Image (cartoon, rainbow, N blue to C red; front, side):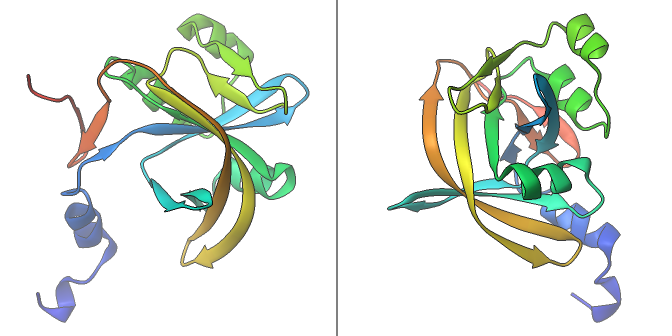
Length: 165
């Protein structure tokens, strides 16, 4: 690959060739109110201790909330939840729009909101953060987790996908 082809557009195309699941990262933004962000930059890091990472753009509203709250939820979306992914990709959410879309949350005893009816959920405590270019990488230690039956919502080359039978 020629040096001249090293640019954000080409990088996005190349990175988009890697199929990912789709998650929504959630934090409490005010008492009883949730802010979420769609993320496919989520991965497991360690089994001992249980660690995951999420990457958050420096322009995302979630960044300041994660830095102050230090706790977050990860909801792994199931097929058919594309509307949730699109909604949480927006910078602002409102309780009215949550209600219109039928979004419901479960709150952990520690005050972390999780989306209901998803493929899996984790709650995490931030144990490290590292700046990386235009994002911050957050390492979270898993406090609780749950998994449910179903198929994942996938993202590949800029489009939502599903597993073939």
